[in-house]
Image (tube, rainbow, N blue to C red):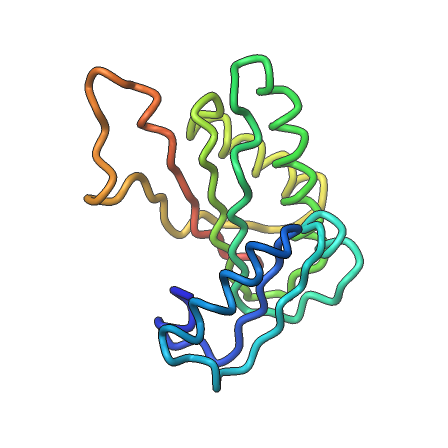
Length: 158
């Protein structure tokens, strides 16, 4: 929705949940954007990245929290690496990716390292164009450090 509102001509949405896709369509209509081009894929994002052609010039990876508890960090890093490696192997040259993580237990430094490893394994040149943290509408509660969990990188793919 933000991409359409930001001026994108075509937006394809991928989510494993039919309910999420139904809500996505509803929000597109509520915002008067139903005449814009786009597809809704009810599909596993990992499979989508591996099996589909990726002719996009801008891709947003915004998965759910892969590490909901500290014990999940290793598996989460495997998931982040796999999804990025698939993206890096197939995305066109001179494209951008906004990669997001909402896993508190995977900090920014670790998230960046996993992205670096995926780029290295995919033999792909990747540059960080921007780093993003929480927005003003999502302040960190000093008494709840776990509220500091959102992070994203804007990546340029050579």
